Amino acid sequence: MEVRCLADAEMRSRAPEIWSVYDAVFDDRASYADWLEGMLLRHAARDSFRFAAAIEGDRIVGIAWGYIGAPGQYYTDSVRGALGDELADRWQPALEIVELAVLPTHRGAGTGRTLLRMMTAGIENPAILSTSQDEADPAVRLYRSEGWRTLGTHPKADGSRTMQIMGRLP
Image 1 (cartoon, rainbow, N blue to C red):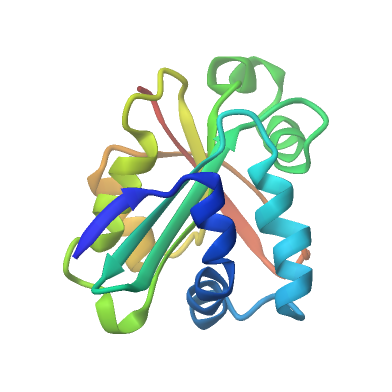
Image 2 (cartoon, rainbow, N blue to C red):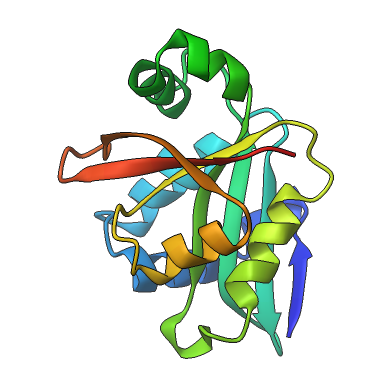
């Protein structure tokens, strides 16, 4: 398996394949078009956007993306509101890991860890993300094993549950 960053043109050309991984893992967007315009391409336009993929043969089996957040963006502002200005000032601007997903059939082999490390490699900013509050969740265990810590909590964008905000210093 190869894990590497994809350039913008390759990411765009492989968007349907990326969607299939995203949808299989999260199943939270109404349609491919909604996801493409409302998430992937909107995020791809942001500062220091990076996209990594785990590729087995010629098939994408894992994805991760993020960017350096800025005031006025939903997640950046939500984190600031949850943490308060004093703590947020120590953690922002940050690399915001937006998504990390590995197909269920390819989990447990270090693919998620490799994607996470690729996302944070060479970044001089702190990194933050939101995830489940369940300490038994494999994603939470992965983040903790890589030195991430809980900074606070905030509601998921759709209001369905509370998410923990995790961070890691460079």
